[in-house]
Structure formats: structure tokens, C-alpha cells
Image (cartoon, rainbow, N blue to C red; front, side, top):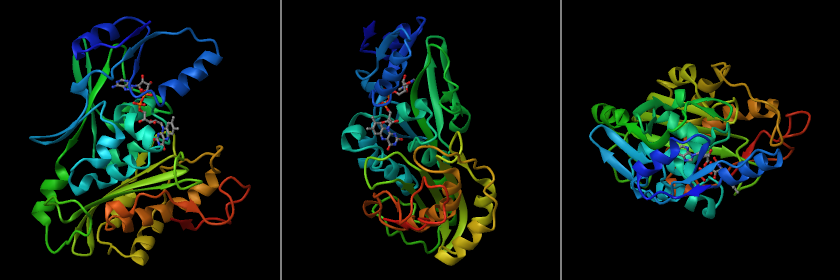
Length: 330
Ligand SMILES: Cc1cc2nc3c(=O)[nH]c(=O)nc-3n(C[C@H](O)[C@H](O)[C@H](O)COP(=O)(O)OP(=O)(O)OC[C@H]3O[C@@H](n4cnc5c(N)ncnc54)[C@H](O)[C@@H]3O)c2cc1C
């Protein structure tokens, strides 16, 4: 059965039936469905939410930002947002290609809960919260609790993700601590000391699933980091923040040698990269420190100039050893 409700209330009524499944942009749904059909799973009641205009769009609220669940990557990439969102906007530009970005949605990315979901690291650095609604009420869950494991979430039967909310913590902090930070990016907000970025390593420059990716969000006092949030994806079942590294970066100057030294001073033991078709775990472990430094340095590059996926130089990411190809090319 298939339905395309016109209102959120109608969608929640349909979703309360047994064996319903949500369809949004369909870019994960259809490939997953093909897999299910090959193992003989019977079709469910599909609820297409693409007619629910109220789920789409980005709005500033009293305490932060609200991104509707059906907001597409193209919407995000072109939105006028503060610099703390530059990392998320960069991720948006690197999810698949333009066709995928035009229909793929932020909530679809989170609900698929792939370790390689490009939206997750930047949203973790933003302390994103997932807003859920069902016929019986609504609740909110912090993103780091919403994705509970490999392709698993805290979504309950009958629930729809209605929005992702972002608190405004960095904006108020930056205004308090702002000194001589001069923003070289292309945002026009007042947060001149807040910078964020996203870097993705893939086997080719476009339309590629991440081997590893890093989101960084920093506050600078002049050239010195006063606060840092770092999240790494595709190197553990769920993308993760690295609190020990975040602490080690405080006080570091935003220059390559100092950042490299801070990154290498910390054991990145929250990461547990595995071997898969895209790369070996060993290779991922080797390149992540470099990707983190790249992400930090990219913070001060204009967003329009940092959309390309990094690629290994020489060697292969899936070879038996990871001694070659640890340099990254853009
Ligand atoms: C060619 C191709 C390239 C891709 N490249 C990338 C890439 O580079 N990086 C990347 O991260 N992803 C990539 N993807 C995956 C995909 O495009 C993204 O994850 C996208 O954001 C999914 O959004 P969607 O709206 O299409 O989700 P859908 O496919 O509609 O749904 C995905 C899952 O989420 C559930 N769902 C969706 N919305 C809601 C909601 N509001 N409430 C509750 N459940 C919901 C659905 O039931 C389904 O289980 C790619 C996919 C394709 C086909």
C-alpha cells in the first residue's frame, strides 16, 4: 500500500498503523528496498512525506535554529546560515551529486544511520537534537543518542522525525570572546571568531561514499583556539566526537605544525575503523590525524573553495598495507 498524506496529522495517523515505513527523498529507501526484496521481505505500507511542506525549511528560533526534517541537501548548501554551519553546508555539497542533493533529506541521512552518513559529523559538532512526533505526542533526543548503532536509531513505531534543532551556544560564546578574529569565509554573520569545516576522503573527487570524514567547529581568539569540537565519521559504527582531542586543541595556534602536534598528542581510541570495500581499517587509522589537521586548517578557507573530496595520493586504500597513499590530494 502507498499513501502521500497532505498534512502532518494525516501522516501520523497512517504511521500509527502496523508495518508502515516512511519514504522521503527515497535515495536510501529504494536501494535498501531492493536489498529487502531480494531476501523476500513482504512490502509494507509506504508513507511518502514529500507533500508535507511544513517539514521543509530552515528557521531561526529564539534559542537557535530549526531545520525541517525534509529539508534537502541543496536547501542546506544554499541557505544563509552563520559560520558555525559552514561544515554542515560543505557536507551538504558532498552528499552524492546534484540530483541526490536535490531530493535527499537531512532526516533521511540520520534515519539511515550509516557510519558513512556525511551529515552526522557536522551535526554532532553543532550539538544537534532530533525532534520526533507521533500520534501520542512529541519528544526530543540528542543526536548522539538518536543513532544507537550501525544502521539503528531510537525511532519508535509510529514516530516521524519532524526537525533537527541546533542550539545557539557558539554564537553567544563567540560574541562574548570575540577579539581580533577576522573571517575570511563567505558568510556574513556576526560570529567572526567561530569557524567550522567538513572534509571528506573518498576514492574519487565526486559522487563517492566517504572512506573517512571529519567535521570541525572552533572558536578562535586571534590565532589561538579557545574551543574545539571535532567529530569523525566512517571510522566507528556511529560517527563520534573526540573530547580528549577537543581539550588538547584548546590553546593551539591555528597553524599546521601546532595542530599536527596537538592531534598526535592524543590517542584516538574512540575510533574503531574496520576493513570494508572502500578502505582497510589500518589505512583509515593512518589518515584520520591528517584529515583532522586538514579540517582545522580548512576552517578559514572560504566555503566556496572547499567543496572537493580529498583523495589518497599513490597506493591504494584497500591494499594489504597502508604504507603508501597516506598523503591527501584535493
Ligand atoms: C547515488 C547515491 C549517492 C549517495 N551519496 C551519499 C553521500 O555521498 N553521502 C551520504 O551521506 N549519503 C549518500 N547517499 C545516501 C542518501 O542520499 C542520503 O543519506 C540522504 O540524505 C537520504 O535522504 P532521503 O530523503 O533520500 O531518505 P529516504 O531514502 O527517503 O529515507 C531513508 C531512511 O530514513 C527514513 N526516513 C526518512 N525521513 C524520515 C523522517 N522524517 N522520519 C522518520 N524516518 C525517516 C526512511 O524510512 C528510510 O529508512 C547516496 C545515495 C545515492 C543513491
